[in-house]
Length: 254
Image 1: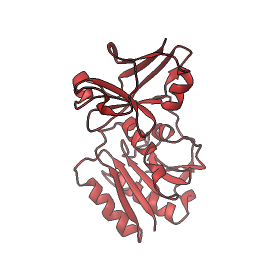
Image 2: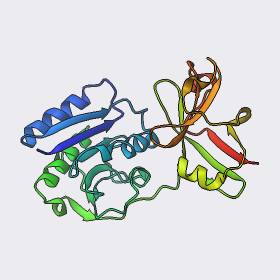
Image 3: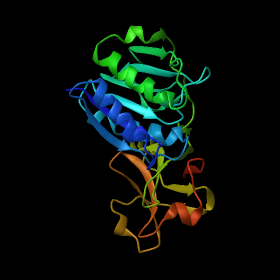
């Protein structure tokens, strides 16, 4: 049974239901899984983060449809990518380069549906699933290179790591793009200071649990994704400090 997952910024509109209806009509025995329809509008970084840390939990051969900034046009065509044993359908705008660590085996640019008006991504997603499930990807369009994005990658030297917020969860906790392995490699057991956006928000230790600090205080820890997370215990850090995915995170080693 083919599995198709959905990540979109379509919120509570009728678009997800319409896509599911067309997929069920076009592909027999397909199983459709909603990962999220609450991506911030056009926020490809947020979509890339959720895709990166969710797709590997699905069986190999799963098809992942990313409906964020996905309406096809001559300058924004959808692509079908096979990588890491999975299939991905998304705009070729750098999103997949942020979500994938492995080079694609296949990357095909889809032609824009002719004669249709509005919601062309619906037809494109259905067409993509059809060619993937019938092993006819080469009929969908021409091979293309995957667009690369240099965003959302931390930089470091002997004294600093410079990163940014990659994701803000529903509690207002901020998850950075600094992973535990990079931190340990750069830190080498030294003391450190973590700065969030400005010198005003400074932490000098890592915790294992949120409640190691008092209510309302900042806490930093490596979460289940092995990424540095910063929060206000029993508070909403993102709202308090007006943070978003452009906000910086710096670690200084002493």
